Image 1: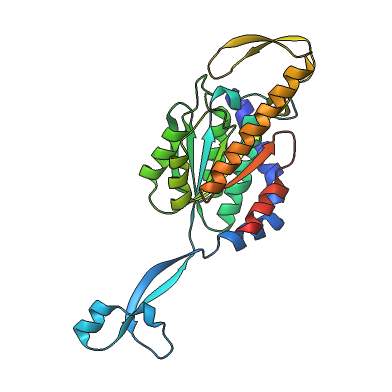
Image 2: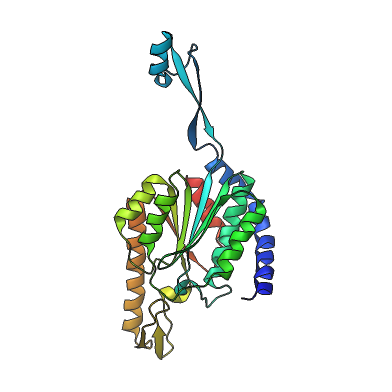
Length: 287
């Protein structure tokens, strides 16, 4: 995409997502992420009815009368968008290629966060972390994130999900709401996913084109792995081959879903040709 195309696409995405973020999705986001944590505010003298578990024993001993720690709701949150920019995420056989589909979802989440006075940041990764946009507030900041996703150089390489998760844990120690976008084509360590799931609130969004999961009967086809460049000829007219391929993809998806479940995290499978508002709404509703 050249600069004019990117500007045009960003504007289109802003217009399309305005309706969804002004509707029930915004309300559901706010009720989900409002006041999910407690942070220390001050220490004051004990008053009748205070929770004795809040007593500050050090100060109580020093002044010989009870003092309690006052806690308040954490109103401001950080949303981190992690986007896989390996080459397999840069194509589509339907109405939108994956990068555009992901950019629109990120805009929807980002604008919802802005409406809740939350910060939004971005990590673009493939075989390594390529770009990090630190969390900030504001609509213009979200549009800059969307632009970065659209204009990124998608890498012909294997995706290092482990490296991306390790970077997240080192760079962002405060609990965040993490949305991880990938086709999860490559293997990852369950232990790394568990570490992220225990520290942050994690949602994996598996973004797939319909041809990722099932290949139609089109005769002999030269198939190229977008990440490794490896090419092989396959006979798609063979029903056994098509069935075996589809079943392998189903088993892979099942394994990914189980890994997220074991890691106190959530996973959504999204088809890039279908709407995403309802699955997101349902996810927010369960939190």
